[in-house]
Length: 387
Image 1 (tube, rainbow, N blue to C red):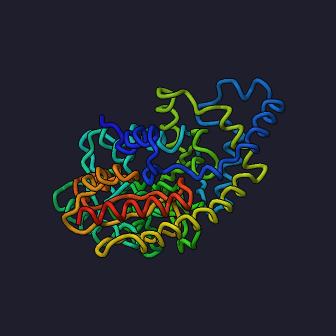
Image 2: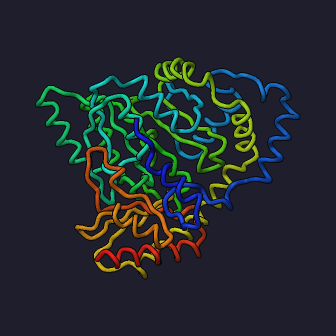
Image 3: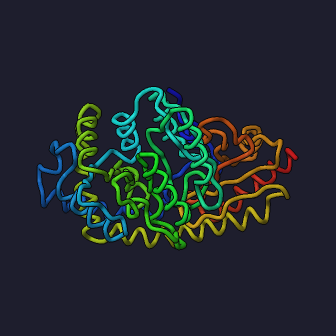
């Protein structure tokens, strides 16, 4: 077990006046404090003791039905054999999937770089990673096909593919329609499951150009994971999995041994927020807020970064991914940056098989636009100091 480098870094930043470009926190101005205060009063008045009681492991029916309608309205289509389960954030969803599907020594195909905490979870289950590089169009599925052919020649078969195709964390890129189609064709040919982790497509501020993998899947191979952390409140700790009824029943059994069920109160709150249209209001506001903040970061990078530094240009999500000139370690840069009063996450933490020493993840969702400009200026000064 290893501590999350992001969580450890946030502990440091919290106790200082450092501008944080490190975490993945939603913009404070998007958190619906007044609306949720009203909803809490309303659901307690309406449902009484039920919102404070134990509830079914799979989830409260009023929430699950509202969730299915929400997914449908956002082009996430479930098959006739699919079901959903409420989880304590999408993090528990990934944990439960690993617990149900993986044995020590199983092969997991994962993007490089990839979501840090998914790497943590899979690593705890003793898997072997096959890392597939990404570019501006997401996972390079031609490389995936090469790796699958190599593994087949060796008599080995991966258990599953983990991907974040839309508004990737940490890289900020989005998988093209053609590559999504190719990925599903490969999953069919090699009999693979695909975990689609999708926390950010709802708040994409530019067209993604492709539906979710779940909506393109005709074989029931895609396991869809998402969360309310970015579209309502991370403090509710509420996520979900949409997959075959058979898999959902196994996740339900596994969850009983972890936390019995996800917070009953959180599910009632989310159900009411969906019913009142508050979630969709937050989504529309988030698109405007994050587009402005992302634009500020990209302009600040263009203004303050020296020649040789490059970065992605996201269509959504919360992050910009950056490459430093060869020979500059982002960990060494972090030491200098902290002294100048700015923090970011070194990119090598997101590489499951090593590498990425000259990369970094920058967050634009939490800081104000003024802090973004000042933070990037300080970071640019730190880079120049190391050149």
